[in-house]
Length: 319
Length: 253
Image (tube, rainbow over all chains, first blue to last red; front, side, top):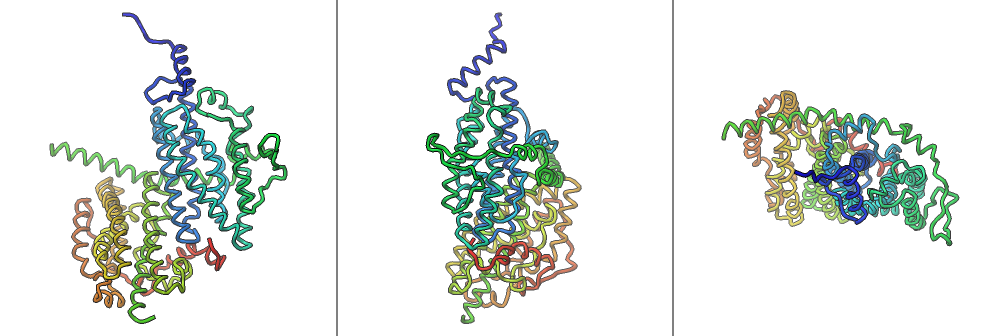
């Protein structure tokens, strides 16, 4: 019998043709090993970011200043946990378990959004995280609704809807502060001062220096470059800051008529790499916290397993 | 304010405080749960309780003709003026303790809120109607956890039993009517808590038995929450909860 199986190069050709044709890749389809690994890296990082992001926001749940704000924040953090769950599940279709992904996070092998290594110090930070951090995430995630891997693209559709809701709520809460007392206005400005640059850093290094970018674009895992996304974020956010009456901490920020975009200053890349490499204020705290919760819950997870085993045995006995 | 209205206000504020304080405690679990699914579920339950508190506080504000807002009542009273049951304010402890508390409270709340839907006060009845739906879901969860932890491993069994033992002395207070409640029961506004005891005991004992847990031997019992006599933990919880309103008085957030 003739062997009709394609060799690796032929498979890759068919795969790339499908990508070029805007077809979605589904879990059972053949895919290059590096495509799989690249996606696992990106999706697990995304899921971890949702989960670790619960910490700086959760930091203010017990101190939220009104019943309404407490409810909004609880609902938001609940959504983040939900996003983490979908994205872990979507990543699991690539043949990795959530336990393995969490282990990689604890071992420092998997990353999460570096912005969560900055501390949330005042109530205004909760608004700033919603407005800027979720705002930056949406700019990226909107393009990911068209990412080539089907389960990830579909997860993004739902995530985007909720994130844009969060962004509006964050902005609305800053609007109240910005039009409030002098202390509240200062609180809002201070939050913008501290979160602005880290938000721009969320888009990653310049295109020329981005390690995974070129291949990810070819495979349409990524649909727009880091610099394109960053520019889109700046363009949409500057007028919002103006409406708040707050000042973006960048003296070089200026509308460029010719380009039809805002020009803006250079990111402090030393700080970017310093924080990514573990020297942010909260890097250790975030992982210690996650690991502590995980370890403290070990006996619960063991109990659930033992209970399920007992139930199964009882059912078998009864049958 | 006349006597009858004052009694109704006291009753509504006590209901609000019960929900507020338990919601605040539950929210402390956020990002600390044993599963990501539980982070989600526990914040969801916390949200239900804060929402319930908000409805009761808003009604209280209305009864006071807006003298204080719902937020004022929640964030600007000191501990002595809070009227929650003591069981609601105890620190979260471990997961077994928290689930034991939820279960004991959920069994009570489901039945209590179901009856309170018949309150002659339309606003109270409406809030109870919403609460009863939530409590049904809460009880399904906490019931499951008592079974799993009680009949799980030796460690989980021991922790669940310890949680129950530590909580048991706070149970009596669930069934004590305040003076305001006694008057409101006659008018059909409030529910006689004492009448729920047998049903509560039967339901709880059946689940404990299925979960291979023992009903704690009652050797002690404490009350005081409804008189504003709280545990020493409570002031710390309020200090955290009320920080912004206290540090920056009189502002909108």
